[in-house]
Image 1 (cartoon, rainbow, N blue to C red):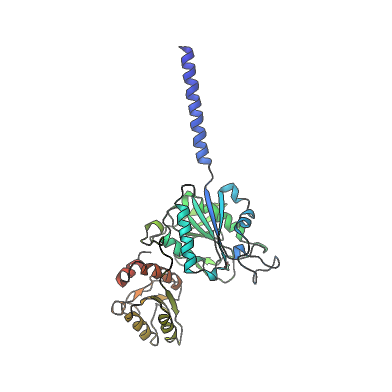
Image 2: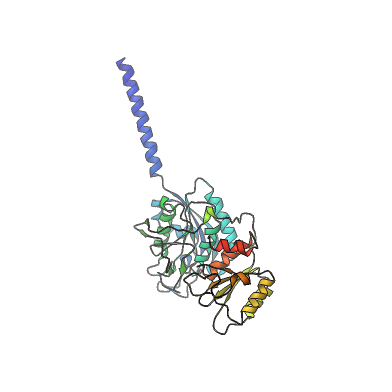
Length: 358
Ligand code: SIN
């Protein structure tokens, strides 16, 4: 009897030990983060350590980028893929479709917890917003770049990459939409913009505000993203190889109709008018925009100002002209939403709903 209860106690102890070890292994498991490299200054090299302009972007491969920051292997289980090796001024719709499909495929795998995309800073905000609209997962996707090439004194790439990996592996970043991690700050894809040609603190969400900080590798969130994104959008690029042509026509004092007419003649299905002020329509541009709309081109009135809501029926009678307003989206981001909207509908009423939703 005594012998029997001793065996039972030993078995119970062994089970408890195994259970605790399993729980510990589970909680101690490093997050699995895939790094997708696309080029940019973060992968750039200069002639000397003081070369911070006039360097060559997109030369260092993904494995070298990872090897340069051995600290990330302590905070995540990393895999790396070279998706492109380009300066981001050459980023095109075709690159976005390839990237989005790869991101969606990886995030569908149970062994991937988050994704970091290394990217040139020039169009980083555009790629981030595109992915924010087409990624079909709540897992974190973080874009990161650097303003100084990898060979520069005080290169910002390594710390930005370390922060981005920590963010992509953090449960706190789940469901937040596509994020941008630069300069110890966390920005939401929809609202962030590059604000300075060369300084390390170039990424800003000027009036609406960044959503958090990264300190000591740990993300701290202070704001919620309210516009719909990722798993909650109606856009699906899984079967698309091309996006509708949408272009931006920039307004300025003395602007005429040459750009609008040329863009329509080149086949644009949508045009973003980057208007002055509250998206105003200059008298010399207005007839060309109206003629374009009559031909079926969807016109979105945006503002080149950088901040604020373009008021519907404010500076133009949008109801009468059958135009759409961009809400607070910058012209370059309005172009992205209009392209995706045109993959779903040509109804301006529906497209306006989308601009007030995403
Ligand atoms: C680029 O956008 O590829 C070059 C500039 C940069 O990454 O900062």
